[in-house]
Structure formats: structure tokens, C-alpha cells
Amino acid sequence: MVRHRCILLALALLCALVHAPPAGAQDDDAEVEGTKQHPLEPPDTSSPRATFKSFLSDANAAWHAYLGSSDRAQRAGGREPRRYVRRAARTLDLSQVPPAQLEELSVQTVILLLDVFNRIPFPALRNIPNAENMADDELTRWALPHTNIVIAQIEEGPREGEWLFTPQTVERAREFYRRTRRLPLKPGAVIEDGFEIYIALPGWMIPVAWVDALPSWAHTAYLEQTLWQWVLVLATLALAVYLARLAVLWSRLSRHGPGAKRTLLGPASLVLLTTLSVYLIREQYGVTGTAYFVLQTLLSGTFFFAAAWGVLRLGSIVAEAIIASPHIRPGSVDGHLVRLSLRILSFLIGLAIVFEGLRSLGVPVVGVIAGLGVGGLAVALAAQSTIENFIGSLTIFADRPVRVGDFCRFGDQVGTVEQIGLRSTRIRTLDRSLLTVPNAEFSRLKLDNLSERDRILFRTKLNLRLETSSDQLGRVLERLRALLLDHPRVDPDPARVRVIAVGPRTIDLEVFAYITTSNYNEFLGIREELYLSMIEAVERAGTSFAPPASTTHLAAQAAAEDQRPLARASGPG
Picture (cartoon, rainbow, N blue to C red):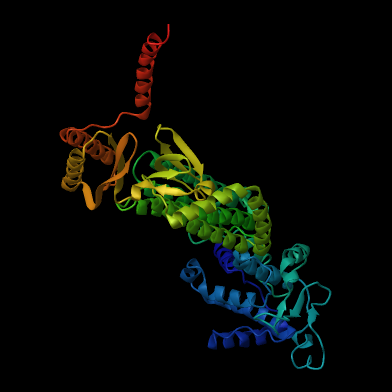
């Protein structure tokens, strides 16, 4: 008895156990032999009769394959019967089935329809329309008498002209099964309810003997699944959630120490756990029907979310690895450009993964993209200033007028660039305050990059006293010129000292030269040294600098005041 039950369970494992109608048994046997001789030939779907016959024939071929297979072949998954089940599924129009549910739903539909055909009468094959007696008719649909099971001709697409069970028939197969499962079996049927056994049959990891040894209450069905299946499903999901949580917590430790690879542990663990959970739930626990579709949708959504999350994390890791090279400073324009480029690239790849996941789950991606376009326009209008700053940052990245660490003049401010971000630029001013300038405004300013100077101009004017003689003036010019030409940090071309004006109180000299340094602090030191040498040169020439005009004016006014009492004393009286 146990052996007989195991055989029945094994036959239902690959969803194809059904006995063909007695009237067509010989034709089916011939079809089986033809299929063996031509294993690559697709099922005949040239007419309603051919499609209906192909469906029954392939199911009968699966039945013969199971009866002739060894126990080892059955435990390995029954590849030969599976092949015939897939052939039977090719008589179904599955164009409206989401890709993620395609394989499972096609197998279930084959089982459900076979169980239905085991209980309801249908006409002899010779009474079903075929290509010959449809030549003069404009028949495009044929319904099994007294049912809503319809075979229709495909009007467009890669299978144009073929006759297939309609998508509505596929969708309502479970309803047909529920409405006929209490009917008596037709003569010659071997199994009472193939679908009920199919949903309770485990995979190769769970021996059938273990399932048979369970108490009767463990085989009670809830939502089309037995109790022992629900226990295994809940235990698997709880363990997967626990392991995923541990992986995410462990990956967060990378923020406080080395080991950036651990940041991928969270998404990688989710991808692995969801894949393993789907395999166990479907292939080993044998969960099918609505329960499987709901679980698969949740786990597949988690899978694609984790994959997109992993791509974003990987983009950040690659960006930081590139920036860690000695040629790129973390806060430089190049560093931000690398981060921006890889973030955009990883975001686009992640978005493509999400769209592919939605498509596989049956979500209309075109509608989602259109909705995102309208929503994106609204967001763009609301975040106009943010987008403007972002475009300004792209302009700075492309033109590179300044870099991090450059000393520059912008507007009426002077300071050192400390950071160039995607929204703003931060500059340390001379009074050590941190000035943040939006990139949209910063890119429009007239920028004077003082750090890009290869030389710094030294230019000053010396005012000698008007009493300086021509000999003294000549010695001053000679000494100053020699000072410039002999200094190692003064560029001799051009380096000049010229008399530019002789005024009522001063003789004006102009000193013009370039200091060969781009460091402003070093320039200040060299300029100070030149000033001291110039003062010494003027003093050695026997002259001096003219006092300010205001001082001369006060001295003349004081002398006039001293003469006024004398004038009054020598007056009349």
C-alpha cells in the first residue's frame, strides 16, 4: 500500500498524471512513439483538434514516462516527464502571465485542466474542428461543449496562426477545477485528485516516507497548502530574516573601522537568502498556487531591491577606491567628479534592475515610467534652485577654474577653497571664517585664481626728497637695479627701476619686477627683504625719502605762525 502511494505521489510531482480517454488511447500511444522519434518537434497546434489532441497526448506521454522511470530517476526530478509537461504547456496562451510566474502557472494549469478533463465529458476527437473541415469556415474560436474552456487562433505575434487555450481559460483553470473536483471520475482514471497530491509533494531533500509518517493533522490543508508545508515555510522565512538582520548589523561595523567589503554583506546576504528561500519553498516544500505566488512576489521584490542596493553600495566602494589613489585628493574636484560619475552610473543600473523586477512581477513598467516622468517634472519645478546649483557644479567640474586648496579672489572676497560639493563651494576667508557659496552663484562670478600664478608681481613707488642731487639720484638707481638683478628670486626679465615723475616736492621712482614664486607667504618674505635693501641703498646714496605732503604743509603753516608776531611788532605805533 505504501509503495503504491509513493508511486502515485511521484507521478503527481511533475504535474502530468492523467489517463487519456479510451476512445483515443491508440492514437495517443502512436503520438508518444512519434514524440520519442522526434523529440525536438513542437506540439501540433494547427487546429482546435490538433491542439486538444497534443495536450492529451503529451500528458499521456508524461504518464508513460513516469511508469517506465526508475526510482532513481524519480528522485532526480523526472526530467523526461517534465519535458512532456512543458510540451503540454505549449498549447496554452501564456502571453498575459507575468514572467516571474510563468513556469509555475503553466505547470499548475496543465495539472488543473487534466484533472478537469478526467471528470467532464468531451466530444470524440473526430468531432472537433481541424484544418481540413475549417478550410471554408471563418472559425477563430472553439469552445468545449457546455464549458468556458476555449481554444482560439492567435491573430498576431510570434505564434500567429496557432490555436491555443485562451488566456481566460488559463486564468480560470483553478475555478474549473474547484467546480468539477467533486464529480465522479471517468472510467479508466488512475488517480482521484492529482492537483491535491501535487501541492503536498516534497522535493528530493525531503523523503516521501517522512511525509507519510507525519500524523494526519499535519496533512490538513490551509489555503491550498498542508500544515507541515506552512510550518517549514514560516521557519525558513524566520531564519532568513534573522540571518539577514545579522548580516546588515555586521555590515554597519565597517563604518567604524577597515573592511569596506563588509558594506556589501547586507545586500549580498539578502540576494542569497531570497534566492535560497524561493528554491526551498517551491522545489523542496512543494508550495504552489496562490500561496506560492504571494511568497514569490514578496521574495522576488526583496531580491531586486537588494540587488539594486548592492549596485549602489558597489558604486560607492569603487569610487572611494579610485579616490584613495595618491593622484586624487578626497576633497578635490576630481574626487567629487569620480563620486558623481559612479553614483549616476550605479543609480542607473540599480534603476534598470528595479524596472526589470517590476516587469517580471507583471507591473506595467511603461505606466510606471510615464508616472515617473510627470512626477519628475513636478519635482524639477519644485527643486529648481537645487538643480541650478547642480548644473553649476557640473560647470565647475568641467571648466575647473579653481581646485581645492587654491587661493582665489571672487567678487569682493579673497580666500582658500576648502571643498567643492555638488551644491555649494566652501571657502576659508582671510579672517578664518568659512564662507559657503552656492555653485550656481559661484560659477557666474569672475574668479581670480591666485594660486595659478607662476610669478607674483612686485611693484612699488619710491618718493625721494626734491633736494636729492643728480649724483645721488644716479647712485640710487644704480644700487636699486643691481639689487634686483643680483637677487636669486627676482626674474631679471623684466626687472626695472625708472624715474617716472619730478614733482614740486618729490622725485618719484617706480620699481617693477616679478618674484619667482606662487606661494604668497614666501612672496611676503622676499618683498620685505627687498624693501629693507632699498632703504639701505637710499641711505648709502646720501639722500632720503620725502616726508608726506601733509607733514610739509604743517611745517610751512607753523613757520607762518612764527612770523605773525614779528609783523605786528614792527607795525605803526
